[in-house]
Length: 207
Image (cartoon, rainbow, N blue to C red):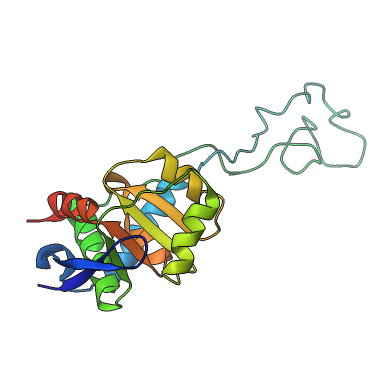
């Protein structure tokens, strides 16, 4: 069972915490990262790209010229796909890019990602995370104290004051436990959690 130090926001050690092996000591399986990140990014796609077929393009009701006697190929409408201003053949239409992935795979990938961060010694656990004021500089001071150049901070639940303090700092993401995901864990080099957030993650992902 991995054990790491417990800190306050002043970087003073206030104890230690044992991390659950089932969540933070699992086998790292990189192939799951590919599957789950692809799944997440596909769900985020808007899928609003669209083109018009010849039936949807306005105009073209009149025959461009007579059927015979011109020496040219016969044409029935100026909205045919080979005409400028005509429709598009087999163009994209609004759709969902989401696909299914078993919940067991998604949970295993998240356990694997958290375990990788523990192996990389990139996990910091706070006994609590409170800011003296809702200011970017207050959050930036904590970043500087811990030498973080980027950070994923996980809280037990959404804290609007902390979210507002961090939202203007590049490379920083603040998530509640229920929003923790593989993509953001892998995206950031540093993972910080409060002690209560660790308990919440274990409750969510433990056996």
